[in-house]
Image 1 (cartoon, rainbow, N blue to C red):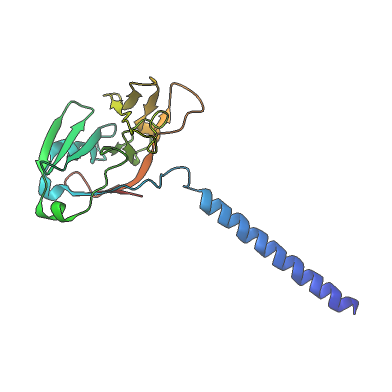
Image 2: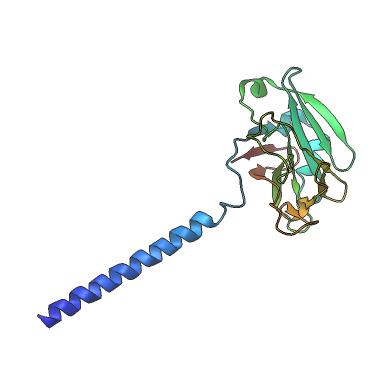
Length: 197
């Protein structure tokens, strides 16, 4: 009888260890990017092999980190509006494919994309200040960030500064939320840009 009890106890202990290890692994993977990317709806696909837009291409080039492009859409005129932190700005008309696609460009029709100069990672940020903007506020008032040539973004309302090159962290005050990030991918300067969550 004692041998059977020992075997049952040993099996129960192994089972408990296995369950605890699985729970720890689940927690680790569940938290791995839960605080990195937002779940706020964003969906944008631009085929720059068709648009051939140099303002956007400069930000989608891994060889030129630190160049960040703001992307907006004008649904009335059926155009994309591009401006980067190096002073370039341009617009391009929607293609037939763009007209058929659904677009949700961040919280207030603006995202910023580019390669970080310190991380070489391709980033996509929402243009709204993470400290000031509340998407649930009524009335909904935009609190956009201003992108600067050194790869920082500053809020005109709270005056906080965020570093686009290092994941959108606040450089002017500790404990402030990072910029809102979306998942992003590029296949090169004149390839496809995909931003979403």
